[in-house]
Image (tube, rainbow, N blue to C red):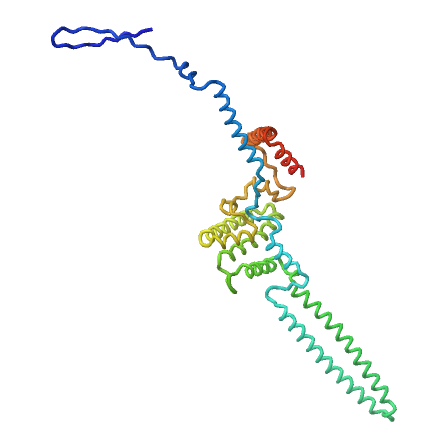
Length: 341
């Protein structure tokens, strides 16, 4: 099909004339799309190479170990610092923080000394009375042995009584000053003192960021224990969430000011950098993931987004396994064996 276009040719010496030019029509859009410089086989090979690269990438992602998830509130389990604090709190001879063992020993020694002096006075009084009664007898020399025997028996009884009383006094004082017989507030105060002594930069340091973070961690542990036992205590739950946020702000400040000290602190507290940087909320998803209330934790219903995410992950895993079975079957066997263990 030809399109006729008229072009005016102006000339000075002769009148206007018309000239017709024939131009080819534009090709169809479908023909342009179907046109390709390469052959169809080459196009298919390029497409397969692209799929292989994609499946290889998925296989590498599946072969990587799963990233460790750390509780942003309680941290890792079996942290040496936390275990050490709990062990020191559970010691049988552990005393109240306000009383030192030396002061308690002085109290017991003073009580025993006062009791011994009182017994000595009683024994001397009893001996004097016995000697005065025996002086009225006709023959004092004949009863001297009996008087000495009675006084020795009295001293023996007094010593036995003294040892029993001292033992009871020691047991009573030990029960009074024992940390096991105090309230939860005193136990928490003792744990905070232990945390301060371990994280302080110098004796008496209570204001450094790492000390404040350690104190906040101890408070979080005690408050979370109460929140797990009292599920309906919403006030404690909100205070616990706010306390975790305050610890996060302290650690973020330490992260900016002293990165080395920050890494040392989070490792000792059992935390992770990703969990510290993220904002924390005690949402229903977090409670379900950690099983915060144990068997009483409400289940988390699956949404369409979660279902689609699980389907996509299963499809990627299947294609990655197919790639490994074709190009690296040994790696697939190793991964399956590790998952079985």
